[in-house]
Figure 1 (tube, protein in one colour):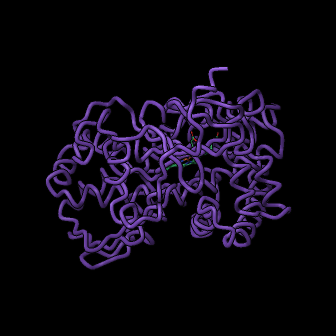
Figure 2 (figure 1 turned 90 degrees about the vertical axis):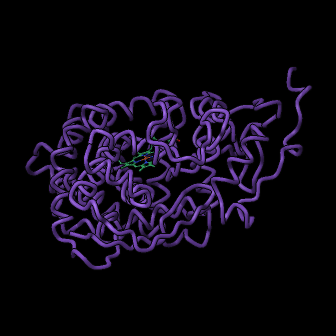
Figure 3 (figure 1 turned 120 degrees about the vertical axis):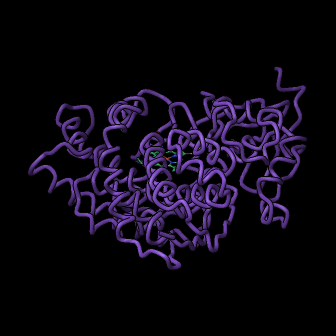
Length: 402
Ligand code: HEM
C-alpha cells in the first residue's frame, strides 16, 4: 500500500511545550516551528502546524473525537461525572447520533439564534459595568470577565443572577480536564457532580413555567421528541462546562490586546463598526484555543508521515494562526487583515464550538461598551500563561478612568 513510502512517527520532529522558549514566547516559537514543519510530535501526540493541514484535519472524517482518550489520561473514575461525559456530545464520533444531537442546539445557537441574545447580553454588560468601582485599580477577571458569560448563561437557563458565581466557578473547575493532569480528576469529578445536580434542579423548575429562554426552547425540543431527557440534561451541562472558562479568558485577552494599543482602543471607541474586525484579529493573534484534539479512526498519512489508528492528534491552532505562509507578518497586530483565511479559534465542522456566535457577541458588546465609555481605560498589570491547549490570563488589573 501507499503507506510503505512514508516515514514513521518516530521520525517526527519533537516539540517541547515545557521548553523555556515556548513558555516565554509561545506564539513566536510556534511561528518559527510552523515555518519549518507541517507536523511534529509532542508528549501528548501528533501536532499539526500548517494552517491548511490544520483546517483540513479539523474537518477530516478519518479523525474523531479526542475526548475518550483525554478521560483515560485524566483517570476519571466510574461515577456520575464519567457517565455524563460518556453520554455527552464530546464522546460521540462523526455519524448519525452526533448529527442528530447537534441539530436542535445549532438551530438555537446559530448566527440568527444567537442574535436574539444580544439584547440580554447588552443588558448584562451595562449592568455589570455599572457595579464596578471607577478611578481605582480593580481585578477585571473577577469583577468583569467571569461575570459576563456566567450571567448570560443564567439568562439562557432562566436562573437567578445570583447563581452566576456558582456557574463560573464550576466551569473553571471542570475545564481542568484539558490540563491532562490526573491530579485534577477528583476535583473535576466533584465539579461535574455539583453541576449535574444543579442543572437537574433548574430543568425541573423551568418545566413548571416555560418561557422564551434557551432552556425552555430546549425543553420544547425534547417534548417534540428531538432529544431525550438525558440528552437535554447533557446539553445544558455541556454549555455550562464549555462556557465561562473559555469565554472569560478570551474576553480578558481581548481587553489586554486592545487596551495595550491605545490608538486602536480610541479608534474603536469612536467607531464601534470596527469592533468585529478588531475582535477577529484578537482571536487570530492571541486565541484562547491554542489547539483542539482529535484521534485517528484509521491509519492515515499526514504530510508524508504514517500515523496509526488510535493516535492522539492536535491541530495546533496557535501555530496555524502564526504561520507566515498564510498570515504575512503574523507578529503584527493588524485589524485590517483580510477576513480569509478565517481563524480557527472555535474549531470547525461537525465538532465546531456551539457557543461561537453567542460568545463573539458577548465580547463585541464588552469591547464596544468599554472603548466608548472608558476611552482612557488604564491597563495596570496583566499576565498570560500558555499550555499546549490554551492561552490563559492569569492577571488583569485595570482602572476604569472616568
Ligand atoms: C471564546 C470562548 C470559546 C472558545 C475559544 C471555544 C472554543 C471551542 C473549541 C476549540 C471547540 C472544539 C471544536 C473542534 O474541535 O472542532 C469547542 C467546542 C464546544 N464549545 Fe466552545 N468555545 C468558547 C465558548 C463556548 C461557549 C460560550 C459555549 C456555550 C454554549 C461553548 C460550547 C461548546 C460546545 C458545546 C462544544 C462541543 C461541540 C461538539 O463537540 O459538538 N463554547 N469550543
